[in-house]
Image 1 (tube, rainbow over the protein chains, first blue to last red):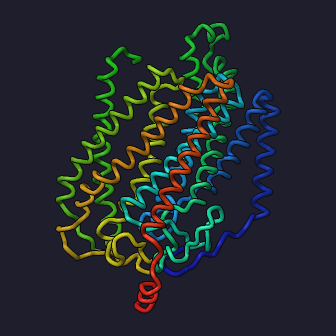
Image 2: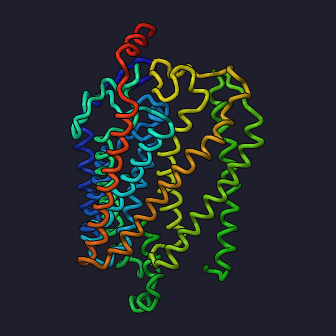
Length: 228
Length: 227
């Protein structure tokens, strides 16, 4: 919503020409990877899937920005890039730790790590709104009532605002967004780790035997640095 | 670590460097915001530059030193595979940024200069968005007040938020990882913790709705009449 009364125009939907161009670029890059360096094909597809997951998860995160900070709109009062990166990297922290337990456990750990960050952040945001700012009950101006709890918003919303606070449905959305971002971030990290595990000894001009003689933490550190 | 320095000394030196970066950011953020919005004719309070900047830098030292020490301990004592700079980016740079930004930003939205219209606690009407306080109580109740307010409210809230994230992230992994081939700690314990926080959030929300209650119809029609 614009303060100048412009109103929300809504998105223009999916642009078909741009989508086709993007799809062609993706297919071309996959094809180039297949021809030039076939080992990297599966990791590349994993990275693409991880990117899609992160972009998809971003849309679930209830970001309100500066209007939320001033009590004009519901949501978390920060930027979406900050929260998505936080969820993804917190997930990656857990995922990297669980990497030796296998791909699926690491992915699950990463997803839950991202969701945990969002769950605690959203709770503390609500605590700040309710107990520190004294903003009355969470209310949204976009819908009449909460789809999960069935709370009505109409009488709780301050006059002339889009709503304020963090309604429960936004909380659930934030946790889902954090889970998707953590899942995508961990998937990208693990796939890149796999590539660098094979490629890094060559890049550094070492034989595989010399690489294996390095201390294990040093190996993992080098791979982690390159993957990030 | 790599050049055989004392680790504690290295942590202190690194935090001291970060303090000056924070001082530069604090000064340019305050002056830059006022200067770029010069059409609002907001005054620049020299008090803020002289007192708040130094306090902010001191707070930055505490925050950076504790965060970096925590990252150091996660690597050295708990054996996480990431190197220290990466760990600093993940925890200090991004996760602390996300938690601190989410819980701290509401406080800048409640600065004195945005407090012209609504009574405390109500949302600011969108039509009054740009109409901020410019001349009232000049110097008496400036953003300088926020130093007290944030140290009592936003600072602890951000700290508890970040501390809970770090604690539960490590706790679930270290305590429950051996169970169910990794699924126990990585996924099940984490999911249970998420559900517990979800229930607490619902309780906070219900408490607020019950305690503050809906706006009564009289005030609603009154505000509509004046608007």
